[in-house]
Length: 577
Image (cartoon, rainbow, N blue to C red; front, side):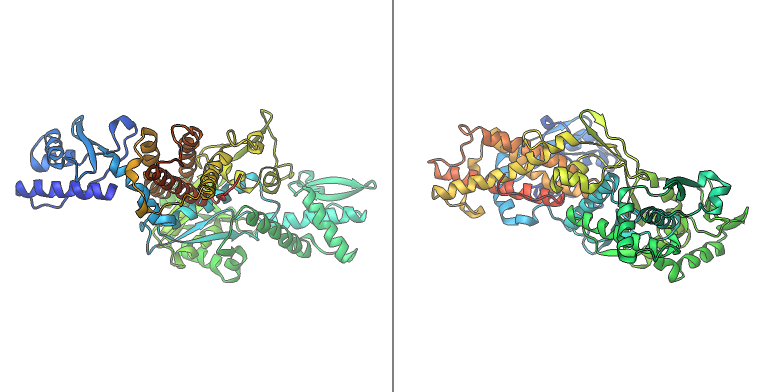
């Protein structure tokens, strides 16, 4: 409808310009949906852009266009000029009614577009260090990245989902030391605290086993999963690992076990990846050293106080950053720069990093560095999300990642299910804090739980189809129904909402905000469920065969859009509830 209306307006405008002897380029005709429904279905403001060109007040231009446009070939019931030159238009009921056969013909392609056709796009998300179970923050990021990838595929992009496997750095050594400490505890043996712990007590946390001290890193990983890994090593190796360093077999075994669990967790909530990129490969292939050398060649590397610095102030940032510590150990920034340069080299047209708010400070340095290395930094985007808090009984559940007292994704999914978990994680703007109401998520009442409310709206369409089958009433096709019978105001309102789906998908993908899909689905279910509740006024199957066919067509159209929306969020579309 929007495309047809743009064509009609274009035809009128072309005729107007030709009469005025204007051979200039046709202005772009952009139709927007007014925020206030009383202003119509669509509005445009191009008349104001033509004022100087035609040497006329924009309102006069708008009034002439409205007069020439008329009903736009039956599309409009009215059009009026507002303010200095806005044109507000209201579609005729027939235009909305015609959506039913259009949706039925399009099926799962309804809402798709070719916006991104021919463009390769990478979405990197989760990328959690393999040091423990996934927290709710990682869960939110995973769902956000996955839904974003689904949206971008819907509008035509060729999307690669990527997990950056960070298996280097100090946190992995701490992981290995933590596992070894628990291994020794399980044996009932003691290990003297390392020299640095004796010199600086803050560097080690010391517990006792049978009165003997066992060194444990102050920032070590203290969750029960660490003990489980230690017990697995004890079972398979016995006491043979007592003299093994933590940063060796302990680290490698823990990393594999934890990542195996991470992979299983992600699979349980419907998240898959096309690529797992290993940080270690950047070192093995010399990419990290190459990045340092190239930055140095551009005068962006400086050595001071025994450390190597990225002189980001030369690129307009507020400070310089250390990339190699005085100990010789790289900071996170250095491999991040090398990794992102490899993204460009792999031929992506656009790259999206989905990261938590704790990475907001890092991103500008990475972006500016790859720009300095000769790449278009505008092709690299950040979608940042805030943290997740969990409330139960009106109180916040306290969490600590390092001490592993946090609620894991597995625990939440076990309590509320994958669909509810995904819906709750995506129904807020990424940059806003997300308050996960555990009590509401566990509530099985479809009227209260928003995920069930939407799914129930979908399931009811199958209930109606089953009833039609029992009564021997065939489900219609787009060609076999008369959509003009859908004439009640609430039916037109439903059709208007269905018609908004493609535009919503386009905007959500463009803005990188999948939560708009959740909002839309709640709104559509909020129209559909009450419609079906009123079985007297909105009786779907009746003795009026034409009305029955039209309303069954509406059932199928609503089902199609609900299913597509649920699919974009990675939720199931149940036939029964």
